[in-house]
Image (cartoon, rainbow, N blue to C red; front, side, top):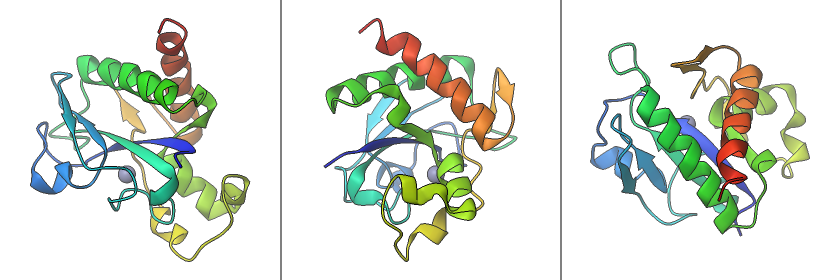
Length: 155
Ligand SMILES: [Zn+2]
């Protein structure tokens, strides 16, 4: 059962490669085009949480493949649609960087019981550098949730 939607970046190129496509449920390239990945629970996306998360990833994130404006808007919209599809509200969205921070400070147990695979998320920086914001896991996560909410209320 999907309880959370987790936002990622691939840390790779602006288009998904085979590994990217088998690492998430949905991907968004730098032109905002969507690519279906694999079914929930079958990918190694968010350590210790793969069976309860839907994982959406922006292709890129490197200094040579920064996330684009059209891409991140398409990402917000896709997140809103997926949250609604699973009857979840936008507060059930987290970035992988936020999950990593919560694994580091111990607050991850607010989301699920502790398990031995959660440490894999520590130090993740997914989506902390975007066209309109560059900040901590918490500030970028809050920014993204506000954007998702805008689309969510218009679905
Ligand atoms: Zn990630």
